[in-house]
Amino acid sequence: MNPGSKTAATLTRLAVVTHDLAMVYICWQLMHVLRYASRHEAWPLLSFSPSIAWVFAAQAIVFWQVGLYRGLWRFASVPDLWNIFKASVVGLVVIVVGLAVYNRLDSVPRTVLVVYPFALTVLLGMPRLLYRVWKDHNVRQRNLAARRVLILGAGQAGESLVRDLRRSGAFEPVGFLDDSLRLRGSRLHGVPVLGRLEDAPTVARETAAGMLVIAMPSLDAAAMQRVMAICERTGLPFRMVPRLSDVLEGQALPGELKEVAIEDLLGRKPVTPDWKLIRGWLGGRTVMVTGAGGSIGSELCRQCARHGARRLVLLEINELALITIHGDLRRAFPDLEIEAVLGDCGDPAVTAHALRLGQPDAVFHAAAYKQVPLLEAQMREAVRNNILATDTVARLCRENGVGTFVFISTDKAVDPANVLGATKRFAEMIAQSLDEEDGGTRFVTVRFGNVLDSAGSVVPLFREQIRKGGPVTVTDPEVTRYFMTIPEACQLIVQAAASGSHGAIYTLDMGEPVPIRLLAEQMIRLAGKQPGRDIAIVYTGLRPGEKLHETLFYADEHYRPTSHSKILEAGKRELSADRVIAGVGRMREAVARYDEATLRQVLCEVIPEFVPAEVASPADAGATVVPFPAREARSTR
Image (cartoon, rainbow, N blue to C red; front, side, top):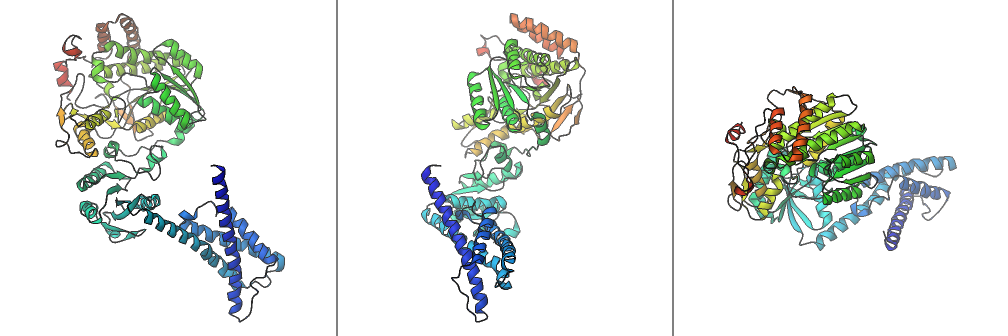
């Protein structure tokens, strides 16, 4: 704040204090005048005495202590009126005690004491409320061209929204729509409830509304889809009030109107982790994250920083990604200690350096290649990054006494039908094998499906296709996938890490699988267009290594609930640690020779359920992967 602003604020506050003390004097004198007038006696109105001085002093101190001057008259409301009444009552008590000691309340009529707090509340409250009415009227007069808004939902969120819209001056609420019969015909802050949600097209025309706002942040997916369909029928733009969880997580600002996002329509109930457990585990600790600049890695960094980690070690091979997450964390958490290490976590020297530098208590291993079709033709790189790098990081964590190693896996590791799934499954087995050996490190694996809006995922692909006018490409009309938001997945990863047992594999409850066709249609509608009319949807066929439907557990892998309803623990399957360790050694030799045939052979030996696809040579069809016919039939189960 500049000096001029400080001076103006001081003068304003001085004026308010002067006004209030003047009201105290007027009230005290007026009560006496009225009391004596009822007896046809005179009261010297302008007399000033030690009693009056005490009334001034006592009431001024009470006003200041109860925070009467922290609020602004511009936003005076019922809570402010209640605060004034409390200050008047407490002030009266202090006045009575002081005058009783001074002169035993001589010449102070008892009726004055009874009426005083009520009269003072009126004298202090009315100017504030009148000032607010005047300011609100001026704002509306200055904004006669304000955008007319029809609000869907007349609950608490709608009531707060009306006040926020009017204060902004850029919007004018013209009515509410709500399905509650008891609200029909009522008014909130003078704004009428004009009908049901289904009446939106008619009411929008009658009120000349220019925009709709959905003020029902707790709606489930089915209800949100219905409301969005109603909004679309009006042909008007629409926004929604953010959920409280989004505000608390810093994804939205209080009072901000946001566009309806695809995650609002997918039907996932808000996740509530055990924050006390997480903060108790993270509090004051050092955490290292590999792949710290990726979609999952960067959000894990934010969750750890937000919930008590003292220090973060960021290990990332991508220079720009490392700079970006380092800058984001530095701005959001200025007191957090951060060590940034640029390099490949599969390089033992790099990982050993990062571990020595940070001496972490826990390591989240999020670095991985994850693009299914690409990795089908890149067996060597998939093995090197997803298997050998995991083995390197995990072993070095154990050698350096890291308390917890958390491996981020995928639902594609279950009955793997592609190179990604097979390499992730092999990495899971490495973590379990190392946990069986003597050592103090706790190895925990967490599986989950797709995350919305992650780099390279289907959501940003569809968004770009829609932006270009289509078509939107979907592999198959029947294909489904499990989805989570990135913050939700990371919160549950940290929860599993905090409570997980040695060698356990946890699967996150992903809810119901989502048809990709439906996802594409909803994203097209969110863009204000109609599927099939404005934007075409083209079905291209399953790509190499893809299944129609993903599964979360093996058929013989029994699972059991954990302390958190959204986290399930997979029962341990039979595992030969010696075979896994020997396989890692053979893979290192094969990677050094770029021997992909041996890599496939080792994967199939260690993971019998994996049958790799046949791959065309780079000269054929632009190195396009050709699906193995028998495998394609198997993948539709």
